[in-house]
Each structure stands twice: as C-alpha cells, then as structure tokens.
Length: 326
Image (cartoon, rainbow, N blue to C red; front, side, top):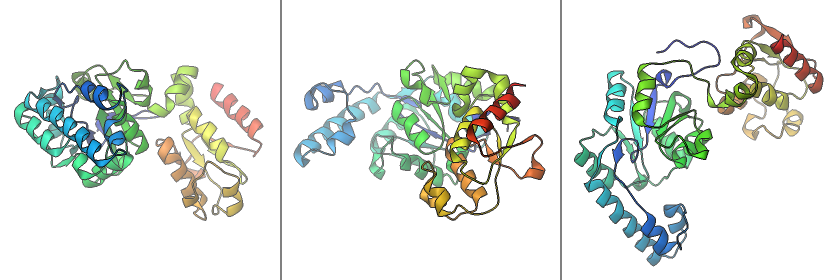
C-alpha cells in the first residue's frame, strides 16, 4: 500500500482491478463500420442495444455479423503493449482482477489462447446478460471478487468503460484514448497501457476526479487546506450546503444527533428516499460516499480543525471560504 495523506488517491491502494478486454489486454483490431453501414445507415450507435429493439430476424442478422467480426479479430489477437506487464504487476502484488467485456465468452477465450494471455477466474461477457455501461456488470464483478465497489478500480479504453465505472461509484482509468473529449469522465487518462504500469510502479499522490475542478480553479493549496477542515453542520437544512462544501474539498462533516425526519427529507431533493428515518450521520455518510468518497463524517472530539456553521447558507459559505483562504 502506498502511504497517502490528505485529499489524494492512487490505484495501487485499490484492492481489486476490473479490466476491459479489447484494447486493454488484447488487440483484435475490430472494425464494426460494415455493420453501421449495412444496418444503421452509417450512424454510430450502440450496436447491441439498438439491435435488441429490432424484430427477431433482423436482430439475429446483426448478432451474426457482430459474431463473425469478433471471431475473425480473435484469430489475429495479440497482447496490447503493456498488458502482460499490467497482469504481471497485479499478480505479483496479489491483487485480484476481473475481465468485463461486451464480447462473447467464446471470442474472449479464443483471443486469449491466440495471444497467450492468462485469463483470471472472473470473466464476465455479454453471454452473462449485462452490458457496459450498465453499472450492474461492474457491481457483479466486484461482488465476485469479494470487494465493495469503492475498493475497485476499472480500466478501459472506451467511454462505456468509464461511464459504467462512474455509475458504479468506482475509480476509472482510461487508456489509449487519452485525447478524447470524454476523458474528463476518468480519474486518470493514459496514452498507452504501459504508462499505467509505470504509474503503478512509481506511485505519486493523485488528485481524484471529484476534486479536479476545484484544483483547476483554486489550486492544490486550497484543496489541502479545505480537506483538513471539519465543518459542524446546523440542525436545519444542510444537504445543499454539504454538496457545495464537499465540492470545495471539505474533508470532514460533524452531524447533529437525530434521524432524517420526513420534513427534512422533503426539503432535500438531492437525497434518496432510502435514507429516510436513518440516523443523520449515516444519511450524510451515505450521501457523500457515491460522489465524494474521501470525505467523511467525523465526531467533534476527533476533529483537529472544526468550524461551526450558523445555518445561514450565504454567511456559512463566506465563513468557510475565508477560513480556507486565510
């Protein structure tokens, strides 16, 4: 484990990796342009999802065309540059890993044999009934690995991988397409897989996805000072204040005693109904976890630097900003 302090993260501290197959481990040079032209008038669509909406006869034609392209690609498969080193690093550090692919299992197994890539014990393909970017496929992989989603990091080379990981509340690493406009979905973007291997072998603190905007706007010093601060929340409405302060990098929240009563939930449209009548500290912690996983609920006697909020949102935000900026 890499020793990290403050508002930082690094993939070496994750307990499991969930890897895409094509483009991350195996290079199969798949080209679905003929399918776009033949069935979708040249439009770039989510082929499998769109095909599922069509009449059975046409759907089966598309599935057969996809299968043929994938199997031809599998016959010429080769390891992606850096993929064998990535697998070696994972196994040398006893980190469990899984493969999640939109391909069929038959295609993955053939490509693995041709490219001499060892498959892990957990391999999930479209034969299992789930497709990226559906977060359930990532959640299933984490469950099969015996880890929570927050303990996992996903690695992929396409938007579906990164969006699916985000939906599952996992850290996301983009490889080989670091210049795409949707790279902003990822915690880390690398031009090649071997660059990720170098990051793993030579760890340095990384700013997580949720804090990158505030660092861009206000700088690292701001983030570090904000993260060291704990704010004591007022007894009235405070969930919108939490969102603003957490996005500023505030690392600790002290919560009033009591439960999430109906009136407070009614006035908090950002809060899921599953938190109703839960202890407030549990509701706040659950609320933060999916979006700001490094922030936490702290008891007053555990906080080193605590700031008491008044319950007036405008005054409170000004007070916090002045405290961080001083």
